[in-house]
Image: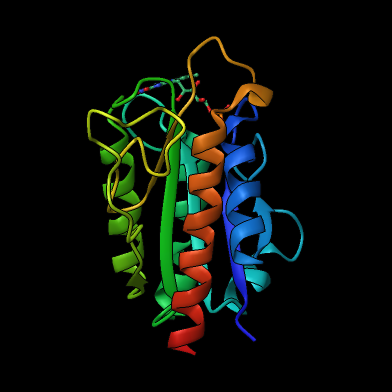
Length: 183
Ligand SMILES: Cc1cc2nc3c(=O)[nH]c(=O)nc-3n(C[C@H](O)[C@H](O)[C@H](O)COP(=O)(O)O)c2cc1C
């Protein structure tokens, strides 16, 4: 049985909704980084026991939030012992603008995964980019390296685009399938 852990930070609840959808699709467990950038008790042990770790952060000023970066810096401890070596890694980010420099965030999360000697899983999804495409299509935000979702800047966490939430579930399923193949 694969253990998938979704470790994420969310300042205002939007990325949390994406994380929940990834957890639903993958059957994984949520692990929230708190407002001070810390994991709950037992969080590091949960990550050590995982087969796959999915990293999630909002995009703030073109990168991860400082709380996520604090977690990433603290992961230098397991890095010393290469504790996460050969686990699967995948990532997602949510931001307000359709582009919003989300790829910078995913690139950072990819680099983090490679420092930990993990195997990266992308979305495996075709973009929805034809004339007939609509905002609620799967992978309308059209990312291949990791999951991207966009929330209008004045939308509450309860107003996430349904197609993005469905894309997040499908992304979770892909991580679960990869974890099963890899086991
Ligand atoms: C400090 C800060 C920086 C932000 N920088 C970006 C950005 O670079 N690109 C973007 O598209 N949106 C940016 N946003 C908007 C957030 O990505 C967006 O509101 C997102 O839904 C917040 O997710 P959360 O509710 O999980 O914190 C920024 C918001 C804040 C508070």
